[in-house]
Length: 316
Image (cartoon, rainbow, N blue to C red; front, top):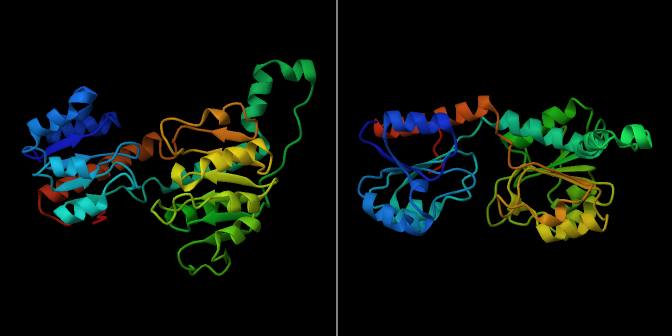
């Protein structure tokens, strides 16, 4: 791959950057000042044949148009909502992502967030650190995760992995997807509001597209109700954040566990002081094992493309 010019849009993984630098001709977009990146792209446009984006910074139509030699976008993520697929299709640019390798970690986090929100683990940690256990006595009672009705919005790879984990806690599983799946022990709801009305914990695990943007709206949140908990490990834009904030403030929703936000890396400050929400900074796949596997998959897709071999995980 020595002759393959690769544009890395941001510093995302040290191992991936090191290997790209060793195997390819690497261009680091962030080394150019933000107000001069168009000039940087123009200067290297003829050499850049591949772009590696990730969940927080993608590839839009303007970048694609600025790179006439572009052949492939190999994303360091499973979600490709920040890649302009229409522009790639028009140009004949191939797109790959990193599915499967991060499924277990994201599913683990979903269950972890549910337990943390229901058992108020972060609040209990702060209670001990503040010396309140000694001065004020025992921490407040919480509620268990075991046996809770778990609804899953999107029964794909990650959604199914969440379901299997929740089953180990004796949780009845229901779901909503574009179509009913061949899992008769899981109850299918063709309507998201009905799903929310019939579960205690709603886990958002679907892909982001125009149809699923703000799919968790006020009606869904109100159906989940003051005892319900929302878990989002998919994309921030699945949830109408102002409605979520209002529901948490007004106690119309029992709680939330959020790994993703609509305007990352910024999370709404209104959430910071709430004691019924657990916040983490989009870390669903951020384990050493998974990030190495994702990096290897990016590299393998680029190598396959350079050798004119079938891509391992093609999107288009």
